[in-house]
Amino acid sequence: MVDFKKAQEIINHEISALDFNREPKELYEPVNYILSIGGKRIRPALVLMACSLFSDQITHAVRPAIALEIFHNFTLLHDDMMDNSVLRRNQPTVHEKWNRNIAILSGDIMSILSYKYISYCPSGMLPTVLELFTETALEVCEGQQYDLNFETRNNIDVEDYLKMIELKTSVLIAASLKLGAILGGASLADADLLYEFGRNLGIAFQLRDDMLDVYGDTDKFGKKIGMDILANKKTYLILKTMEIADNKTGSQLSELISSRDFNPEEKINRVINIFDQLGIKELTIKKSEEYYEHALKTLDMVSVDQKSKSALKEFAMLLMDREH
Image 1: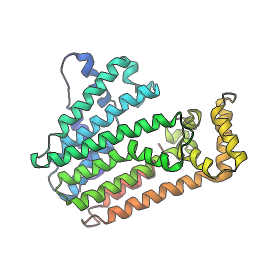
Image 2: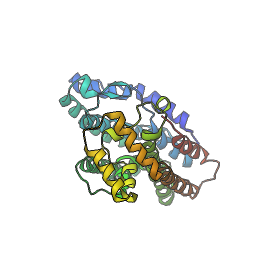
Image 3: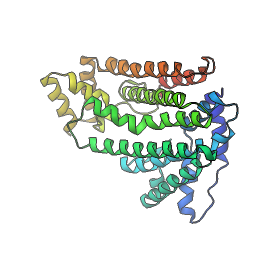
Image 4: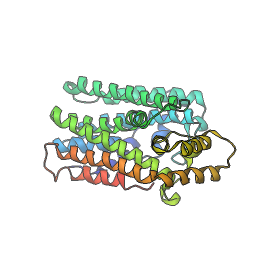
């Protein structure tokens, strides 16, 4: 089986050779730019890894895998505008480097290009592949809209949040694995099991990411701690606190979230103090581990030998052990 590092190398080599040299250049330069400034290439690498579980030949999976990377980066262009972000991978975001109108149009072009590249698969597999890709694309956009809705809604609970991150984050990871399985000639049962492996792993990853935003080591995590708190994001930690806190503590947290009277450091420290009182860090880790363990159990059910699945297990462990 192809391991994660080898899959990354293949994808990075192919992406470095891409050059959307069309006119008008202002439309295509941002596409080349966003694809050239890095990224872990997790989703396309998973396509190749899953394909290699069932086939010795993975060449036919490379361009469909790149389609997922193009689509993922398209969502980042639009997310950055929605969040007014100025940096992406320590480089200026597309709307900062060019302007918002160009970023919108270049994102649209990337969405179209992703369909072009996903179509480069064996013709007999195209209907199944397109159905998977289209449904996933719809779900990712639905997840983003839920995320936007949550900014102005107060009646959000933990289950609402878990559904949102499933759509916004984990379904694309899940679809990457299922796509690779389909292209490798897997049975429908095995392809669905790999989808469930990715779905649960993606949710586990996002929960751990939420926890690291509050409790991570700044030097290792690569960004300032407490940014979700300052942005008043309704993460799992906030929603779990609201669920289990008594009325007094819940009111204190609501005041901290809604008030502008606290300086940033004070706000972060006071919210973390509430988390500590209620053991929210431990509860978040436990929930993340539940999804992680379920992901591994699902992977075990895939009908190939355990040795062949070791690379995916190592990837899952690496993803969950991350501190940055």
